[in-house]
Length: 56
Image (cartoon, rainbow, N blue to C red; front, side, top):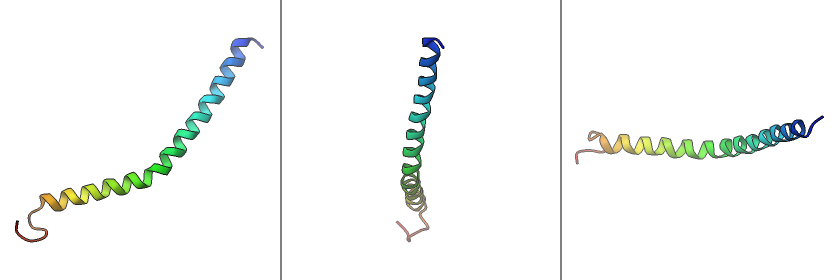
């Protein structure tokens, strides 16, 4: 087995490990970011709709 083959195998394993860390972080942040997004959407809908909350 040549040196290039070993380096390639280690690079692929390292890439899989880093991808796993990135996906784990993304799934941990998904729920809070989703809640913030829903909150902003509701705020914009209420702010732009003059019928909600009485006349302004």
